[in-house]
Amino acid sequence: MKNKEKYLTNFSEAKRKEATQKYNIIKPFILGKQSLSSISKSKGIALSTLYRWNKSYKERGLKGLIYMTRSDKGIRKIETKIIDEIERLALKNKRNSIATIHRKIANYCMENNFDKPSYKQVYSVIKAMPKSVIDFSHKGEKYYQNKYDLIQIRESSRPNEIWQADHTLLDIYILDQKGNINRPWLTIIMDDYSRAIAGYFISFDAPNAQNTALTLHQAIWNKNDTNWPVCGIPEKFYTDHGSDFTSNHMEQVAIDLKINLMFSKVGVPRVFKSWCPSWSRKNRTLFSDS
Image (cartoon, rainbow, N blue to C red; front, top):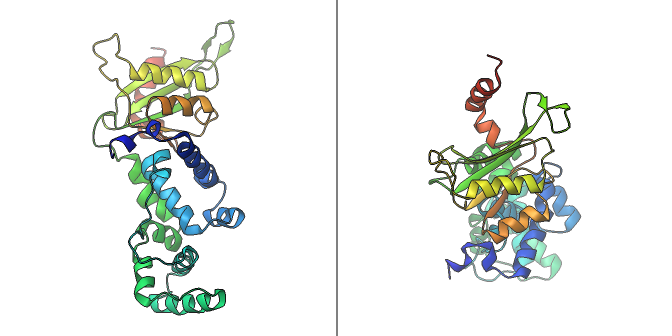
């Protein structure tokens, strides 16, 4: 069963749709446009739930939003609203001791006609909360990103585990098909483990789904040049949030190829940022006048 659930295509359409809906809810946070607290208020979803969705998505992509188990599983049944309130109090103020939270929960239950949980149950709920969620709430988004997000950028342990894609407008001017002087766009897909280029595409057109799909096609297939052995299907494919990558076309391509599609944050390019030193040298060599 575990192997069956490895790929997005092994889940039902309803499950994939549910995962996409969850992603769309936290998308404004991932894009850096809205805080999770604001989303929680506008959508009426517990903040702790949004933290879990974000964590699961960061770790496993859309698949993580399908196959989820609560970290408090196994704790004797407590009303979901009580668990949410316990977590809210724990996240709200790091100075709240478990005893303080237990007292506040007792009052909350009395006001809402719930059975009061024991001190041990409150303790178990708090201890089951992911440390990353607590750090995000108590130490802020910047601390969270430095400690947890950046880890995800270098998490690969083998070739074809993670590929990264990005675009850049080349700093050169050449004649296009119409005889006009123009700057071309370069799209690159790189294997995160080996830092090898799996595929590339140069075009005068602005980044779009078709060009990205062509780059991915080249990256996956065997190359005619035997000195370029990089090929295969990645387990995870990191992309930016350009209109091409977020199009239905690219999402369908990823699902059909059983690729776990991961979106990086706007303004944080993964490929050219990590490849910058070597890219700069290659750029100067390729396009120098000498």
